[in-house]
Length: 356
Ligand SMILES: [Zn+2]
Image (tube, rainbow, N blue to C red; front, side, top):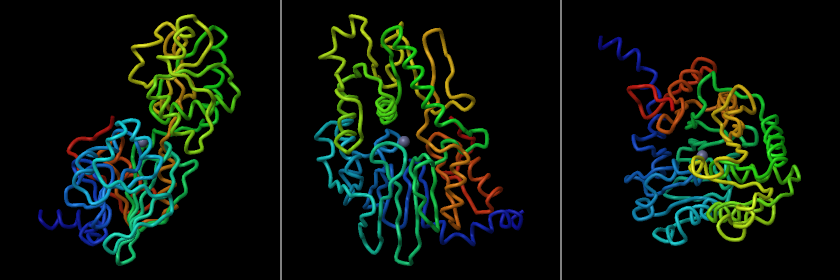
């Protein structure tokens, strides 16, 4: 029995040195090299990196600000967090805002952030240790426009890490979104529901499609959109705050597009023409949910094929899949081993499959 168990795990003993250079903790911290923890607090690590401003990557940030030597992020992520958490929140710690490609040397390790296609400011994180090992964490990313970084040890997100989670209609989804908004505007206002970052992508798409009606939104979403504009993203202008300038338009039944966070879906615009944007749609670019509500399949994550292609091009010796955040860490690790022949492990180890 002991021998059988050893045989099963032998490759991992052989890979132990690489394996110790990256890990994902039970609390969701992605550990790279000996100094860095990404996207959750880890008390043994002096450097905390925030890959982007989505809530599941801000875990324990308050403690990191208090206890870490430095908290690293891009300037855009800093500005988004300042809106989401309040202007004083980041003053509690030593925030180092670094641009893509600008290295930070810390105790013989070199840290560099690279751009990813996800939300404004999102980054992948490369740590090069004293032995020259390249340890990379992708963070969340959409493969389409993400530069692939070469790695020896790769930690990759696993949101759509299941072979059934493929999607071949990115452009069609954008066209469907524009068509649905135009259709809705023939009858009156259109309400769009989505997450931070995704809503601003919708604004960009509608702006490019020359939708001319007013865009209105709660003050927080307007300020997040302004951060996008300040960092060079071209959005529709002007952007109106739903609470102030546009009260008469809201109640008067005029034509406009209203943007709300997904958490407001059951609270506003119940009888209006409604569009939800979500990545959890795989069969068609657009689907009708009820007589006045549609869902458009707009995702800011790689589908299964994109995840595998990233791994193949990054060319690591060992892959760790993020099995902490929502997704298919175990399945992705299995498929990487089976299809690419690269050793892969889902961490942290879970007793039950975690697919949400
Ligand atoms: Zn994200």
